[in-house]
Length: 285
Figure (tube, rainbow, N blue to C red):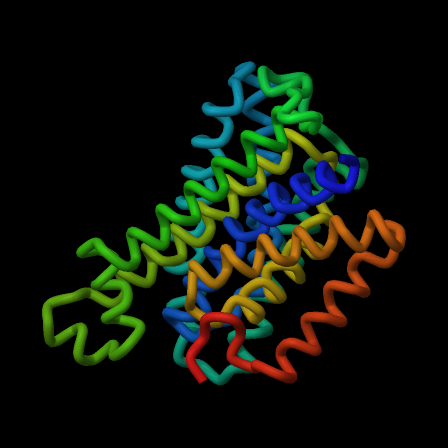
């Protein structure tokens, strides 16, 4: 029964991995642009949740929405002020621009919030519930359920809505999209806003269950790259599957081998899978 509880906890954590990774796969798949600052977006979402709880006493629903909106605005602002100027530049310029952005956001957070680990005060999601003999923290259960719902919602938006069709049209052929009356800059700014917003709300959800510091963005960024590559570049549904798989593997390996080995197992299996299927689970060959 303990192992079952570990597995369920790993799947719930993997759902949050999937949510913030879906934002990265949106940018990577649509614009062929690597955003090394994506993990810092997750970290900022956690601090937005902390500020909302501390300043106005808002609950999980309020600080999750606040994190999503704040990071959406930040994502659009970053696209307008930085990304659109380097999007057609050489790959090295793109890499250095977002890597520098990651350092700027991370060390700005160090300056504002210090390097100490923090956690949210007690919220309405405190406590645990018993499901069939399994004890699960309410915060972790709610965060996982919301993350799965939002990831599927993003997949539905991209696949079945007009906005999604425009985003995919720009991804396929920017010039042809312009001839159809679509404004690529507006769509790409929207994509960056959605990407950052997904990361922000994922960070707010994780803040309900885990402590953090400004350096946590580096870890989340690495996980996001693994999830995107494993799921398939540009596939939100692939990110969902890959996030759940990675969360499951981390939980199982930590239970059997110890917490210090969980990342070794994940990245080892990741390399092995990409050797066999380099396009990922749902990517095109």
